[in-house]
Length: 176
View (cartoon, rainbow, N blue to C red):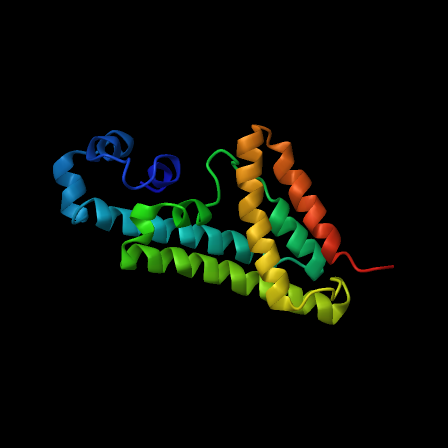
């Protein structure tokens, strides 16, 4: 279901799609979940937890804040699939349901906290330029990251994602 939400969205995912992807019987599926929305909630939680896990793995390295930021932003990604959380934020069917929207927001909040922590740490240790206040930097990073997915998809060339992120990182490189 997590993959189906990213590929097709909530409204376009049918029970048949879910059963085919899960390779379980209808009775088994509905024994564990109350319906498509309940399954979607668990899938969104799964995606958010994956994002948090990836962020934590990057944060728990011995690199300086700038290099952690670069690793986080330049990690391997499936551009066609989109961001684990951003893709769901664009899904009206998800964001209209308060319990689902709350999990998407939790994912964005986790990313915001990770980035803000890195920016503050980097400004403090001199590895990140203090050109922007931490919240300004986080807003710019989140917006650029989500836009980079869309630009790469629209131009049908994944290299534009990397070009966008490398350009963004220049803003945070301390002046020598």
